[in-house]
Amino acid sequence: MVQSVPLWEQPLLRLAAGDTLRPGGFTITDRAADFVGLAPGWPVLDVGSGLGATVERLRARYGAMAHGVEPSWTQLKRGRGTGQVQAWGDDLPFLSSSFRALFCECVLSLFPDAEQGLAEFNRVLQPGAFLLLSDLCGHGDPAGGTSCAVRALPRAQTEAIVEAAGFRLLLVEDHSRLLHQLAARLLFAGGEEQACNCGQPQLGYYLLVGQKKEE
Picture 1 (tube, rainbow, N blue to C red):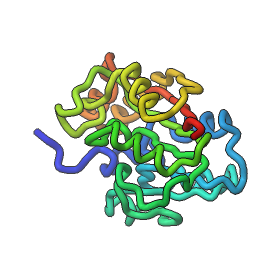
Picture 2: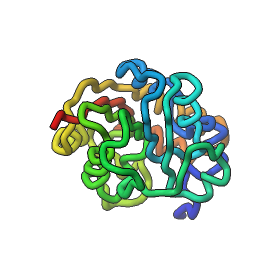
Picture 3: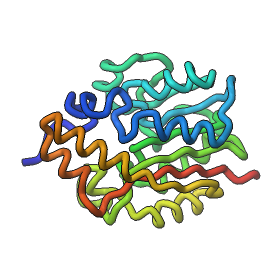
């Protein structure tokens, strides 16, 4: 039976993953921020900001001028509200070259057109700015459904389209163990179906850091 409510809007995921609603919580967020030397005052965007946990984290821990965009009004109402606007990640309501860094965590695989989304990320980033991307990877078909587990692309394909969108790859790391841990938490929380989706052996999870090429 097809679920009418996506996983990221279900209380089960919040119970298993916390307010970040993704594998590893802030583990990858902090790893990426530390890698690029994120500093106080940087203008930063979180695409698919959900409940606003990452926006709050980047402001409190790093002193960033962080903002978020989230298409789901349900999530915005449930969230912390600070610095978030309702918008789609492939049609961002910001001027070109507005940000020093852009986070997109466990979201790109949900885009109807990942290349279009990456082109929009490039547009709003300053030359030399950073793309901090984490997501599922697998052998999925973007036309095959709405679930990120179904749509997840092979990591090599994601790397290729990121480079084609005008970014230089600085770091690619495997963090699949965090996905497996989330699958276990979902199972213990009573979400057998959701755990099976996240725990598929062909699925992995990665961190990719790219830098927009200088013009």
